[in-house]
Length: 378
Image (tube, rainbow, N blue to C red; front, side):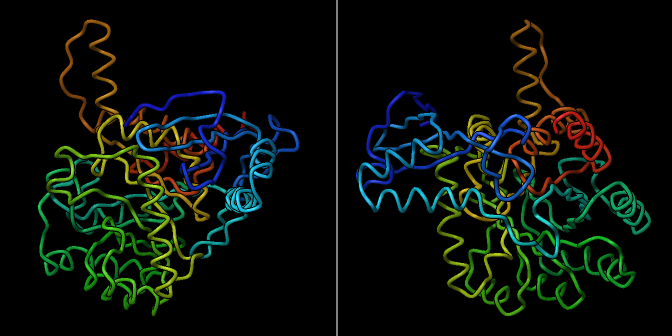
């Protein structure tokens, strides 16, 4: 179900039992939206909502002012009004600091892959000198977090052993942590053993593409009080792009995170330690990825910061090839090295949706784009 029918009327009262209701704010700058509500206590505001309702195979969207949704909910029932107020409060409430970072402003996460087989060759770091050069280049150019991984998660990638992963990441991480650098260090790993080893070293954040689905991982995070990033992925990297299926990707993924946050907090993890990543390109079709990007503000309703990683992803190449075809030109491949412009376009879109963390291979360029965008969007 990729199609959303835009209508003037809801198919059922908001937050009733016969239809699921979801709200996605329509963000704008404070100068554009006078007396608007602050989105997640950050740099964007909103007055109007995209109200999505799903009933069986029927999915509709109605745009309306926030106050109108509250009025309609109140006219239906006290329970409906209470739920509507709760969901709007989740959109508005200021996010507490994540790993001591102020979530009322955007942050850049730089990507370093200590792997021989990542999809973007320039991000592959196979020696300590190159690692150090990339690391300090990203810090000096505006990265608040550096995300370091030793296992490729590109489509079709096979899982490596924990021993091999540790061999790749432990030495470089130890060196960086010992130098007490002015940036947070994130470990990109799905292996608990690697997480435990790197926690002892002093890694700040744990980023798991499998979404911390195992109970022992949740117990580890709860005991260590470590900040974490949970990503959505359908299946595993080796098979995730083989016929992924969703009812409607943004809503399905929203519901996944809603349950996951409950599981984590019930397991002793602080909600203030959670960031979500909808996982662009991880078990999604082009249509799925575009729907996620179109409805990014929906995920603010989870009440936690959002991370987006669209840097150099294949959807940029797919969109470019499609444009060539529309112009009657033959183009069969757009390499990751030719996807910077698309990466920056999606980064600016995410920033205008109030997304707090942008994960990128190109820190200088992304930061420059944000600086320029901010200067004309006051």
